[in-house]
Structures are given as structure tokens and as C-alpha cells.
Amino acid sequence: MAAATLPDTDQIWEWLSQVPDPEIPVISLTDLGIIRDVAWQGDTLVVTVTPTYSGCPATSVINLDIEAALRGHGIEKLELKRQLAPAWTTDWITPEGRDKLRAYGIAPPVDGTAADGVLAGRIARLTGESNLTIQCPRCGSTHTRKVSQFGSTPCKASYRCNDCLEPFDYFKCI
Amino acid sequence: MPSLPDMTTPNLSELAGKALAESGHVTVPAPDAGQEQFSEWLQRMGDNALILGHRASEWCGHAPALEEDIALANQALDLIGQCQLWLGLAAEVEAKGGDADRLAYLRDAGAFRNLLLVELPNGDFGMTLMRQFLFDAFHHTLLLALKTSSDSRVADIAAKAEKEVAYHLERSADLVIRLGDGTAESHNRMQAALTKLWSYTGEMFADDAVDQAMADAGIAPLPSTLKAAWEKTVTAVLDEATLVPPASAWQHGITGSGGGKKGVHTEHLGYILAEMQFLQRAYPGARW
Image 1 (cartoon, rainbow over the protein chains, first blue to last red):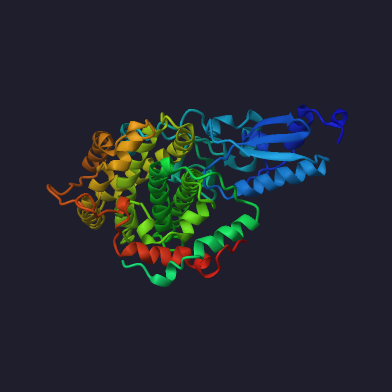
Image 2: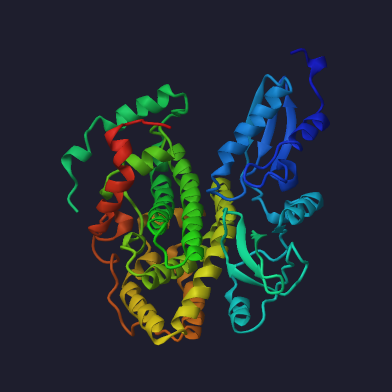
């Protein structure tokens, strides 16, 4: 491929924004915030991806999907780089991504509430009210409770709405 | 457990290495003997995650409630993911070829470096949770310290894993309190678990020559320096849970030549490996 015909990185970002997350297909990989960099090194396109959870089984599927999408757009030389640091955080999910999650029935993460392993607050919460208000994505009620800290995929926790009584997923904060 | 001669067929690693090399996933850098202790330490990190992850996965389909089943399986997934990072780096440092899979699937029990605590059978749900809590509290304190490791690869893995383990710790502490300060039955089971497992906690904080070398290089803290922070977390949670550790307890694995960090394991580890390694032992280099 001649250098003059290489698509610019804005175009690549646009293509990547069309690649859905394999487990939550309503949001794209760029919504999720896991594409850290897109750059040309000579005539090779280098896409840097950071994993969500260390053991997330979707990681290899994500890499395959990126490769398939970019090859479909005519990219011939492609390198996928894994980048661990800085570690991915749910704070990187875009505002559009959060709207899409909510519309899909998954309560988006509340920023700045990631587990920090400081247990004093946790113990206080157990005996009293939660300091975290998770809104039901169906009826909008904030009268909800945690059913389990883990859910159907590595990135979700299970909640239930006390008003509309529907169970729902909440995006786990890390 | 005595090692079985036919499980250590001399050319098994070689065969698997060849199969991996042919599949194009292997780079074999020049060996560096000076990295031996570093690799040893990385295997301790990876093996703790691997073996505890395997134990947690044994609950899949058997936990007392669907939510608990899912939580344990998710935790197992986090731990196996972390294991891949640690053992991947260990294989790179060790420079004998192969990858994390070679270390996970082709070492025999005597070459595993995990703490005895994580290889103990799951017991009842109380035992599983108490073990998870005692380990999570240690694991989190350790990972926090490793975020400032002089080796950036270690610091990067630790920063990633620390977020996940903070989440594990919140859950296990939560459940230890709920069940300890729960019904008479749940309290008794949690107390029995604590009494049994306490004698396996000393090994987490016992320093040896490898730990000293890591501390000297600024790669990792001496385990003994983590004990105060661990005790603070554990005491706060156990108090809330109305549980009491045994007043004095002999500690496994910290005297003489014994202990998981030195590769001297309980009889339970061999059974885990027999199940976990069967496929790679029977069909070296198999991929799917």
C-alpha cells in the first residue's frame, strides 16, 4: 500500500467506533475506552488496546473483531499491542456509552466509587445505608439494592429495583 | 506427595516447547541466570492466583445460591487472568522458552510455589469464604506495595490486579461479617473455618532468601513488612463478625524446609494438578 493511500487515524477511530463490544453489543470498543492509541508506524497500523478485567474471556474476541473490522476496510499491515498501564477504569466509559448502557437496561458505573479495599467504609455501610445510589435503568427509581457484587459477565454486578421490582445489571466499578 | 515418575517424562517439556515453537508463539531469548530468583518470585505470585482461582472455580455449579456461584466463578476468572500475567512474565524472565501455559501445565507439584493456604480443599462454603478473606486481605496489601515496584512490568500488573482484588476483598469481608455475625449455625461454621485456617496464615509473612533478594532490588516488599496492615484489616473485620482467632497457633510451612513457597506441599496439590494438567500431559502442546 503506498503511503499516500493510508487512511488517517481519525478515519481509523471512526471505524473502531463501529465495532461492538462482544458481550455488551450496544456499546462500541471506543465507548468502552479500551482503545488507547491508534498510530501508523511506517505502513503498519498499530492499535493499542488495554484489557478490561485481567481474565475477561472477551479479550481475545475483541482483538479478533478489531482485526476483522480493519481488514474489512482494507488495512493490510496491522499490529495489536496490549497495554496494561495505566490500568483500565470504568471512568473511561464515554458519556455516549453510558447513555447506551442505560437504554439497554444496564445501570452505568458511578465514577469515583471503585473498590479501594478500605474496609472501614464498607463496615459502616453494612450496618447502615449504602453511600452509593444506583438508579434503576428501567423506572429511574433510586430505591434499589445490591443482590450480588458480581453478575453475568466479569464487568457487571447484580441489582434489584425496590419500586418496579425488576432485577438489573450495574456496571462494576474498577 | 511423591512425584510420579511417568508424570515427569524428561522430554515432555521439550515436546511441548517444540509444539509451541512450531505454532509461532514462542520467542526464546538468551538465558539469564541472574534472573532466577526474580522468576521464582513471579511464580509465587502466579501460582497463588492460579491455585486459588482453580479452587474457586470448583464451586461452579455447586454454590449455595446462583449469585454466589457467579461471584466465585468471576473471582476465579480474575485470578486466572492475573496468573497469566505473572506466569507470562515469569516465563519471559526465565527465558527457557514457552509461555505461561508451560509453567501452569507442565510443572510438577514440587515446582509449584503457592502458599499452602490456597491449595487446601474448599471444605464448606464458610471455609471457602474465610480462606478467600484471609488471602484477599494479604493479596491486596501486597499488590498495593507492588504498585511502586522498581520493575515497571511488576508495577503495571500490580496496578491492574489491585483494582480487582480490592473488589474481591470488599466482597469476602462483607460475607465474613454477615455469616460470622449471622445465625448460630453460620457463626459456628465461620469460627471453625477461622480456627482451622489460622495456622496457614503465618506462611504469608515468612521471609526467605528470594524475598530478601526482591526487597534488595526494590522489586517487592519483604512479606514480614505486610503483616501489620493485614492484621489491622483482619482484626477489624473479625471483630465485626464476632469471630476470634485462636490464641496461639502453630504455623504451617515456616520452619525447616517445609512450605509451599519452597515447593513442599500438602497432599492436596497433586490432585488439583492431576485434573488441571491432564490434557496437556496426555496431549502435549494441544491447542484449541
